[in-house]
Amino acid sequence: MFIFTRLIRITLMIGLLSACTLGENYVRPKLNTPLSFKEQQDWTGADPKDELPRSNWWEIFKDTELNGLVSQIEVSNQNIIAVEAQYRQARAVTNEAEAAYYPTVTAGVTTTRSLPASNTSNTLNYTPNYNTAYRASVSASWVPDIWGSIKRSVEAGNNGILASAGDIGAAKLSAQAQLAQDYFSLRFADAREELLNRTVLAYEKTLQITKNQYSEGIAQRSDILLAESKLKSTKALAVDVGVQRAQYEHAIAILIGKAPSEFSIKPLSETSVLTVPKIPLGIPSQLLERRPDIAAAERRVAQANANIGVAEAAFYPSLSLSSTLGSQSTNLSKWLTYPSRFWSLGPVALTQPIFNGGLLKAQKAQAIGVYDEKVAVYRQTILTAFQEVEDNLAALRILEQENQLDNEATAAAEKSLEITTNQYKVGTVNYLSVVVAQANALSNEITALSIQNSRLTAAVVLITSLGGGWDYTEQNYTNTKN
Image 1: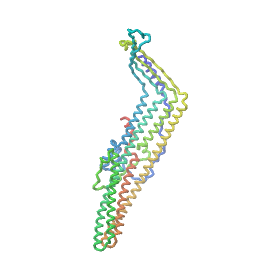
Image 2: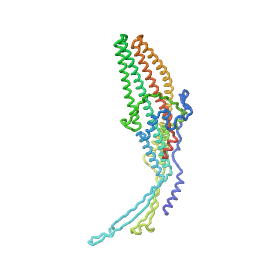
Image 3: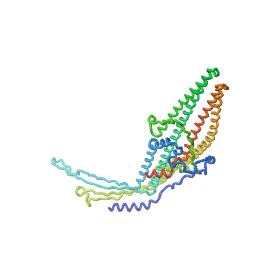
Image 4: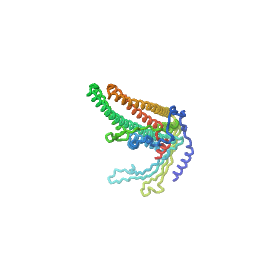
């Protein structure tokens, strides 16, 4: 055991010398964040701030079918499965880096049989005298982390794990948001189809009135043709909505990992009015913790910073230790006995790079360049996040105003249609006035549906721009322990 005792002593001595870690310790890049959003002064958010669910953010819309669909994304969406596989790869890379902390130990058993040249003979009855050697050994080699290269590699790997965890959060959030938008668009396709079907019934009544007017000599044949044209074109619009609805349904199927032929959503018999929920806003600096893409970008900055330390450590000497302990004998019965033992300590090698054509300088310059790139990406990700929040705050504010005005316009158009239809029945206006009033009323109602859909879409994008229900501390550090 002498060899291992010596090796332990050397290891402890080197451990005391291995306190130096090259490279700068990571500091988050500075970025001036505003105290509040520009649009925040006109924003009426949720109060209290915990109204938005921490994880299932889509539940704020209070739609049970939407809840059921979104819950299927994590286990079925292939994009998320791919990102989770990348996360496992990052964990494996970190485990690979950590393995360099420990010695490499190998064991082997060999048997060698040879015939010495002095024992060869041309005699016909000669019996050769073979030599047989038995050998068993255990070898250990170790490269101590004197300059912190392994430590920085593990640090880079751990940050890579956290970045991959952020990628998973971003992929899930993106898929959830896309499904919610597609679902709302599908429901508004149902609402539009229902509106057009109601309009078709109204136009059929108007056509019958026109035919009655024509039989009494009040209306003209051209009025009947115009009424029939208006009726059929509206029916065509109702049929055309089916194309859009089918496409949204197919998109939802793909998001939950199903073939479109295996998935369907029943149309609502009576389309309910979906309302835009109040959304807690918070302050801009919270985006740095709440958005998974920002967290992932920031962890990649830390990863790049650690890799600079790895590149710097390559400039300094490298120490390697090795030793072997075993037993060897030409007699099988004495093979594993004490006198047959052997051991060796070494070689102990200290190597220092002297000339490599500028390779190490180039590798360090590359690592610094990657770091600068990741810092720029991180800052740009934050700026883009601020823009997305501001865009959708403005969209919700303006669309709410537009919705109020359109509701007033729709009410006026419906009243105008009612009056014009009554006037047409008594023959005081021609049918063209009815057509104009009908077109105006239908256009306003379709616009109202479109605005409401846009408001819900803006609400979804705003929630996801704020990070949804993703939490940096919970998601990232919990995932690394799984």
